[in-house]
Length: 231
Image (tube, rainbow, N blue to C red):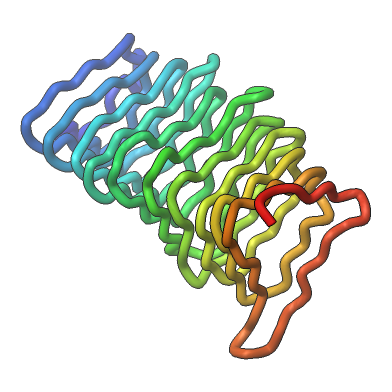
């Protein structure tokens, strides 16, 4: 456990941690990069500011304060158990979740470099707070697992592409993207608007449902939408 601020006066260079137990940062961390491997829980209670990459391999993860990377730094999280993302992750480089554990998401995921992506390979995401944003600067957003929770999700990819599996949430707000690949069914409690998407690619045997307690909601496409896929 790091109880005090780490690198507050003079930021550390690359910090490498290997632990068979828990890793806790109770205060802020300033460094070039962080690589941590733990078979227990990894927890961040203070703001993390890196001029490079953030690479965490852990059983469970608790992020309770903002994670920020600059200088093209990436964020890679490999969790075998639950990852509880309770504060925003803002990265100049790609954000990648490549573990098998589930994700509780109550804060935004943002990439700022042009073309930097947000990718969740297989983890199922539960939205645990309202008003969550997935935002890139013309980078792709790809979610391989399901997204669920009675919450709102806003997705902004600019000219990047979207790829989703099953979605069952309150509101899905699609602000911008080039192509959107829908690999499984989408269910929302409010209206769905695809007019800000160029091309829509549909997977096999999926349904798109907008229904609030039996009251049908609008699903809107634009005349410019090119819809293809397995019909």
